[in-house]
Length: 500
Image (cartoon, rainbow, N blue to C red; front, side, top):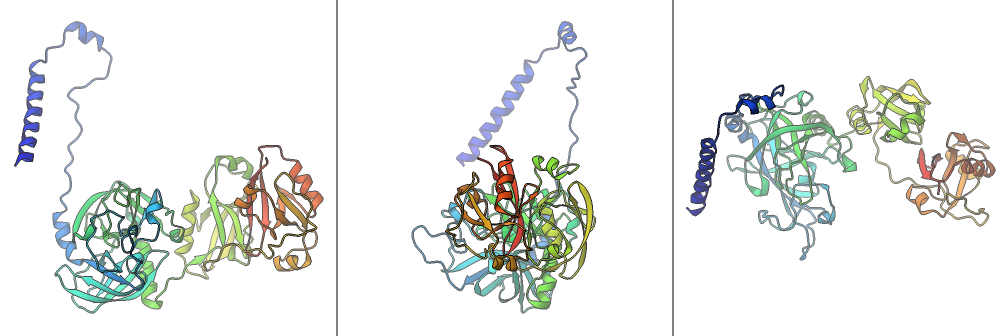
């Protein structure tokens, strides 16, 4: 009872303070009023009253279709004094400012699972037992148990799971189950109220609410660059993963998937997968058990203010093509490193993170119109997308140092003539480019250059022999940025170095 008493006392003291203040108020004198003449001061102005929403009926309708998921992994992590809780990737507690999965951090009051077991949330999308959750909730599992709101426990089959969208489709053997309606996630707007239902820290059917903070947010997890996340300020914590994000009509607009956190707990920023992306994955998982995506075959980056003048752009924006993969759809269509893609099928690309989700949402084989700037001129190129294939790190045809390599220049690059074998491998003609024989500059190594790469251009100057390369490099002053066009066995791209 003491805490209650202190609260009442605090409230009473506050009321007394207000009452005392009101007693000492005095009329404003005429001279004082003159001092405020001409100033816009209105003591009677008040903000309009806004009634906050009551989500109780929404939760009553939607709650029965939300489930709790328990997944036992095939290879539980070896337990030791410093091990992360089950389901967390090794070393996750050492990653600052990272999008954390919802399986907790050391010290969190998580439920006590059996060894090798993780927990999450999900929701039913069809009365015959299809359930949606996150890929990372059920990844590498041999048994998944779905707990319904009526406390039934059903063993679930994983129909398919897609890491890139973080969507998993489950199936339980049951009929006449309650379902959630799917909303058009394209209609979601910042400022709209949204509600999350899930099992944070094992507390079943917990409800939190907030507003949409932003749309089309990229993930710093490179494997999920094809998802334009919905950002909210809804309180999301470990165990909410895979649960629904609902609009005020009780329809699902997203699947809660990630948080941005130092501690592993909620810090005011959470992210959900738009249902447009999720349902695209669901359809493919039902049909084939996997998800296929279209691919341009480019590696891109944002356009900086310094790039605008050099690239001949009217304003910042778009996706700067840094690399074009050899043999890709982009290379076949004629897209070049240094191009700036500004729209895809008429949809503007304001920043580079917008392009991968647009391309990934399209099936392989479809033709798209790509608007881009090249040397200050706007062009439209038709590209037929290929199927997305995750490629390994760029490999070089040769990493051997050559004894005949000349001394390195200021950039720390020793170059020689391109040998016939490399020329054939990379599809180069005689007199095209110079080959790196040795890299002695740490900055060049960090930029990705290594022996075997072929430099085609220095700045805008094509080079065909070592003399032309050295002359082109000497034209730059100390502190200048040098952008080079480089080709290897995987791609042709731009590499920028600073002249020492």
